[in-house]
Image 1 (cartoon, rainbow, N blue to C red):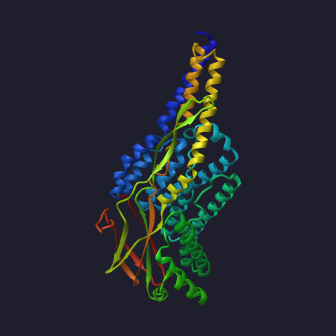
Image 2: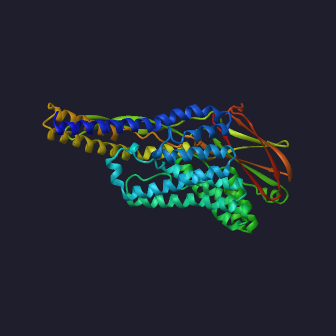
Image 3: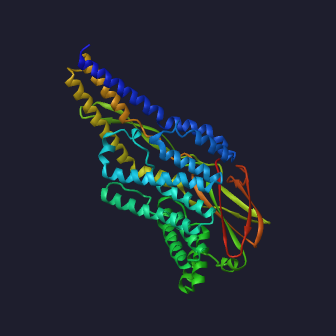
Length: 451
């Protein structure tokens, strides 16, 4: 065996090991592990899920999957009631996603050449934004509403940065231009802090976002409670024209102005179901010499939840949740818009690697020679790595967020939350909370149903 052939064999072996390492560390093993952990989450045994997730840090998760790990661990810790531990992990995920996003802007060519599964996972657009929902809710749980509003505002700031970058790049861009739900959260936290004018302004921004982006792009209308928020804050501020406008447009009565004086409100944020998962989408790409190559890219697939809404009850009073954040619709609609560009990049990567394979064969004396065949093998291995679909995602993110709001008299209350299907039948295990309601104040609860 010649020295050059030995080098080729060594290269092929190294690349084969790279393929093997990539395959063993990709989202397939993580997905398998998630399915093993999922029953505990379905039962509401979030502490069990936390313990299982913590053991998975090194395997199946790895260094390139650290963002996914932090997102998932932060989510299960949130529902386990560990707000500080949740934020510790979510802050790591958020800062790393921002760093990777900034790096990708200045090094876009690496995405063109390299295998995305061999790169650190930086999160999807909606994942980069929705991380702030949980960091804000964690602060709210700890009674730090100023910090909660700051976190929620950071989501809006990032969306604006993202839009600026898409405008620079041109192309298809994104349909995810505003997050109406997070804008409403900002308004709520402002109001809790006593910044009523800021709350009113932000509620109006949420109202416009629901009317345009959410109704037009995602088929989600404005939740009724937002109309009441607008009328209430406009009344407190004495904005007579706005009171009349929003009473007419939203059909809100303004009854919560009086309730705010004599009762407190329990606000329940309901994370429902599971966000879309990824599977491989195969299509044929034609190389410059008309060779047809099968190429794989990730495709989002919806996981329709059985639960239709959460019902919140206490002392004979009930409220049902309204859809406020259609995560699945945002994800699928945005993916559909960007699919042509995703395919184009995958084909371009395949062409580069295919050309490298052909050039390697020619340099080695043709595909019939030992060296040429080995170089071709090495090139094919590289192509296989290049075109592996990146199946990583934030597994524990819900399919949607709903909001239920219940006004209660001051004092201790047992708040029951049950999860119903479209027929009103109970689906998931109910949850119970002991709360102490104070007049004119809010108590924010975060609940989750998996089915």
